Image 1 (cartoon, rainbow, N blue to C red):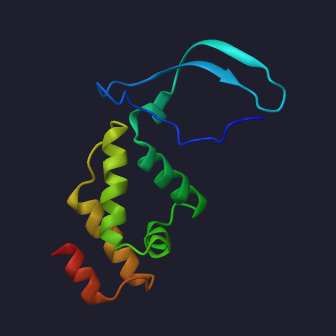
Image 2 (spheres, rainbow, N blue to C red):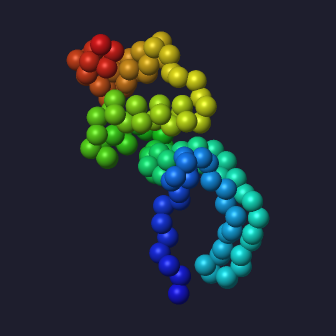
Length: 121
């Protein structure tokens, strides 16, 4: 009988360092593989950030839809996404790109002009 799966821990709970995987096991066949494996980019994210990435991918990278589904503000979803980008070593988004995205969303009817003004405020 296999034990229930838990979220993937990505950081050492005591020191905060990145973890290394040393054993993989197939619950179907019982095959185990031992060694030292990196978690790659996933190791730089918290379990919560990994969950958000999965949800965002399931929604075809539509941050507005993700925010609606999670019942959080678009800005909250965007800030969480920016934290993920930063954790992966990406550059911070510049104001010009943010402005262009907000204007695109107004044009697409995703935002009202008032909401856009609040976002750009």
